[in-house]
Length: 166
Image (cartoon, rainbow, N blue to C red; front, side):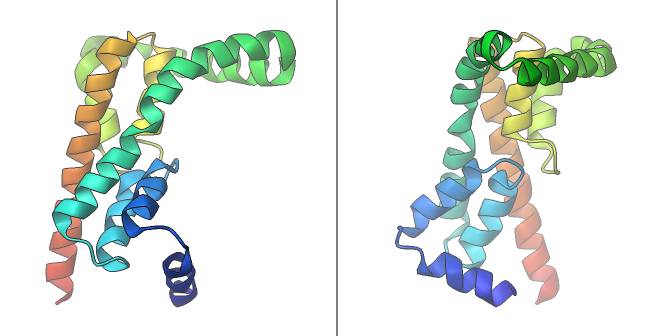
């Protein structure tokens, strides 16, 4: 199964860096999946894998920050069930996390993005910035710093794992 996935990825008619950027843009996979793929499948150096993955992971951030609020307002008028779902999700998130988030605001956002685990990362951090009404100009650099830290963590972890398996 693993080899068939590798064969499929290698057969795609796109340059390797573009494939890494696109993979890093995918929610949940983000750079924690793109860095290992870049190094193992495409034989990229640590620096190239890190750079292309960070770039790809950062691309969705401004799109989410700028387009999610207008989309939510559009859904309020045109897609009632989606608007109800988004509002429930937002109020639930605010209720459960607002006290902790208010205390640590910037550090909380950076840490949330920087921890390379499922359901954390640039996508989730961007959504959190929208939910907690963090100014876009403030959220962008905080999320980007979290992405860079996550990239370093994944790169170092991948390097340590490779050394341990040798």
